Amino acid sequence: MHQKFEFEYEQLADSSRLTKEDQELLEAARNATKNAYAPYSNFLVGAAARLSNEQVVIGANQESASFPVGVCAERALLNSVGSQFPSLSIHTMAISYQPVGKDSNEPISPCGMCRQSLLDFENRYGAPIKIILSGMTGSVMIIPAASNLLPFGFDGSILK
Ligand code: THU
Image (cartoon, rainbow, N blue to C red; front, side):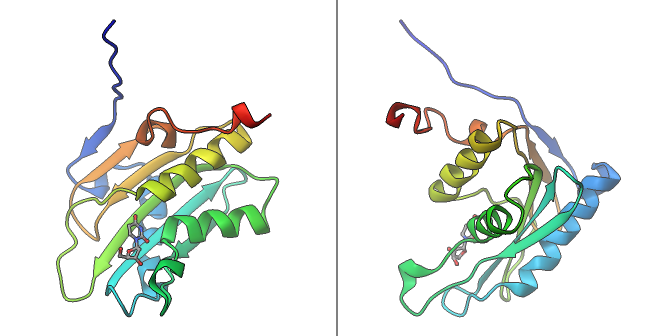
């Protein structure tokens, strides 16, 4: 039997079409690229999460001289939220980037490891995380839940 996995997302021409709240969150993510430590890739990534109490927390990629030790902006942010605000869920995360000396006018989407961490977070709190993706300018993608980005993801239920 053939099966199909598909999901719906929104594509906007630019950030002015977002709600005011989501515009603010995307601005926080764009601004968070300034906190990236990325001397090896020169690829600065910023992320911002709006928590269930409306508080906004930011993260940025932190690279290491031992390359695999570096951490993406998304996981830096998730680990920070989980550590500082363990009782709060994330309802929206915005992600942006600025490659040094290059354009940033189309969305990038999270790496596989970050998709797993996002899914872990969704499962931990039983609440979808809406994901907003955009460069420093240009079009915006709105993905309703992190689980959309990781079909057949491992949720650990078999470990119980
Ligand atoms: N990076 C992120 O922080 N998030 C992503 O979604 C993609 C990649 C970082 C990892 C590394 O520091 C740099 O960008 C280049 O891969």
